[in-house]
Length: 133
Image 1 (cartoon, one colour):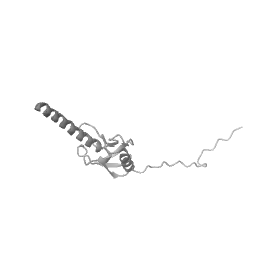
Image 2: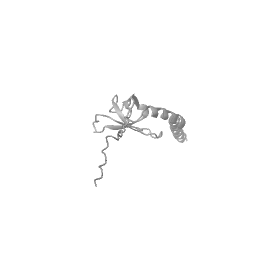
Image 3: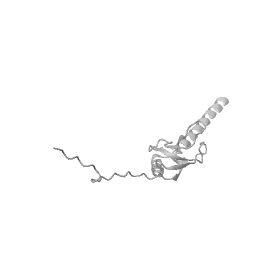
Image 4: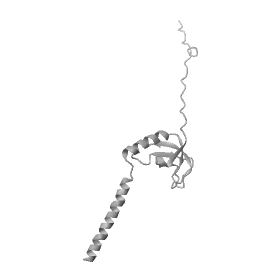
């Protein structure tokens, strides 16, 4: 009887510990409203073409700067920013995806150059040949 009660107590304590750990994990997740608002402000800061510094210590490119190629606007995709680097990693890759909080913008994107429209000069156009009779 003592063995059965000890076994039952052991099983209950193990499940309670797991339930506490799981509830702590779930409560640590950000809510959709807070996460969406934070994503919107950071997405405005990091744009396609801007130079960013990598803050992720586990990354091969930690401390390097790279160019942002793509910014995914979906707030539920965690690694939404694709960064391209001038040098390659040991695997031969030079593009990686990062979270928004793993990047720091160093320089904003360069302004787009406007194309100049060619001015039409009527005097420069060739005259139509006169009809010969």
